[in-house]
Length: 144
Image (cartoon, rainbow, N blue to C red; front, side):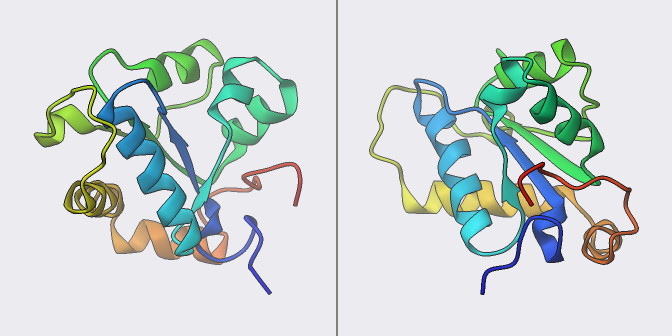
């Protein structure tokens, strides 16, 4: 049985850009794979952007969150700021040396690089606190 987002490493909420460039799609694909691997739980950035109250509140209450933008335009960051969701951890893929382009044939090594960068943002103490539920009080989603 798969673990829900309120248990295990699912307490790490992943909010990602999924924009119309390679870096947006790299952010999205990395979050999908991290979710499948049990590192965290991908969450609906569109729901936060649409100001849907349950989504916004869940994002505000997440014990541990990483916002991932593909580039410096910072759409995911802007969505969180507009919804008054605190930006706890933030990653911009172009800052990691990945060039933005329109090539949607994603390179496996770049996906792995993004996943590593996401994991590197958190130290082991933070991940442990999220796993045990000591990083905050809220669940990362209202559907659990």
